Length: 401
Image (tube, rainbow, N blue to C red; front, side, top):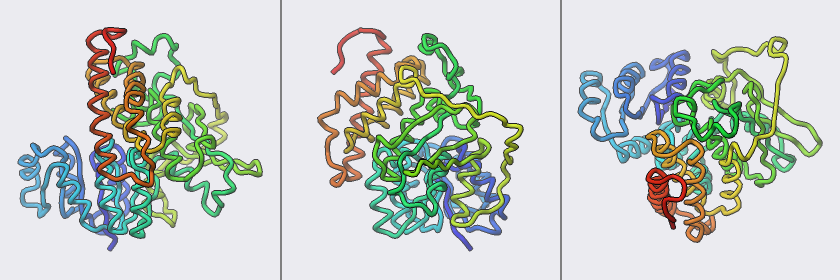
């Protein structure tokens, strides 16, 4: 029986992964080793009972008593806290879904790779912060990383049977997010509720706001560089409001291979779950005659400064990705809390990159997990300082260095 674990089971990707497992036979067809989740302890416990997981782990150590109570009599072990999540990743499994949002997904992903697992990677931050480390761990232990971001799954599928050396360009499509048609001058006043009204995708709160700011796409640009090994100038972004083409690969003979499908993450999850085979999936089939038109437009960098910052990160290399992601996470926290405005998130990130520039130039070949964690920690401190300054006085309350 195939064994598997899901890290981030109660998030959007985790829920859809569980849905596919349920449809494929659930606990009768799979041995579920570990499930981890965040604050939704009721849902985590229900999943663990349904799938007969060996262990269920919540991220917050304070949630352990409640999780134990909810799992009482089920035979499922309960644990809590970041170290418990890492320890759950030390339990060997054939297939591991990495769907924890943010830098917190890095350590469990690395630990899972050390067992030679297939790592279905929905946690783009792992490659952004420590791409060389992650790829080296996979190579050293004979593990395989399969992309679960819809864009990178599309690229991966468009490359099947092809030589990466024949690739001329990779085109990432972007919906443009909830605010894509707002006047540019109105974006500064966008609220959290405004940014959460995504027109196409049903996703979690953080990723939906990252979609509106295009920080999500900026991470994906860097992820493309790290996963596929192409040069930054080969990576393009185009706004595609319908979200039906998930990405495209252009070859040196002028051909472009596009992956089309309904905006449903179960496409990419199911492909990774069943790889190298294809299985029937419960997703809508496109009626191209009904679709009729596919539209595209170039992204406006004034509207989406995160895309410009992604280019700066790729130019710096080294530990710049770790600083970029950490600063982005803090800036998002501050926007959610009402401390800074929607367009001020990019300013916080840029200030951190500039302030830490001298600390970020270490060659990728010498990068260690400790280096990544140290830069992540420092960038969070600096981002909080910068956001705090903005919150206290917005424009020009004092110089921050």
